[in-house]
Image 1: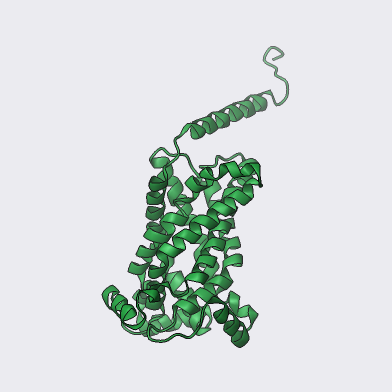
Image 2: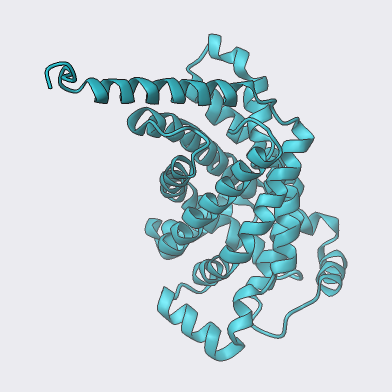
Length: 313
């Protein structure tokens, strides 16, 4: 018995040491993986977003209706179901696909390549600011590219009559307002996208580091991505809600009328008529959309990175 005796916790120490070696080896393998190019990453980002939007579009429709009508979640859902049927929750889905392939492929897919390209800036500013800056840059550019789809999606979601096809919606817009009509609300959309993506990708990136340190999980671990994206979803909702409400009002103007003279005018009129709190109207459905959408998008793009042998975010 004495021969076989070992100091207390020796086995634990061996196990712990082995675990550290394994973790280090995994980190070494991960760091040796190639990084996806800008176009490759954008393609994977668009694919991830296309997948996620199928599940979150109904929440987006409810949120948009709430912002326009001022009704609560229950009233909005019940009236939508009773008056238009269950398929109405997916109104504007084709436009949402176009938005994800344009806007989200840039804001989500281009983030990692742009962040890496901006890495030299860490000599002059904190790393977390570089991450927020990369998120804001990709979000802003993506919102300009995807704005026409955003406008059409918003009009389709708020339309309580028979669904209008893509051709008719485009024709009506060009006839009434010209090509500029597709860029109504672009100022609010760019502001929203910069704040949203800076918060989403910046918080997600930092949260992954914090979760990895606290738990020992790898950055590519599904648990790390899921918990980090959920945290990012909450902070996104807090910072983006005012921009989201103003954007919806601007984009929901009839094709043959102009209710607001721009971002500032819409903001002033909204606060004057409905109060400051109205800027956070629809907070719960926005969060209910952002949290699962961020989780699905980020989990999917991480899985795609892994599948094609690229380094994770």
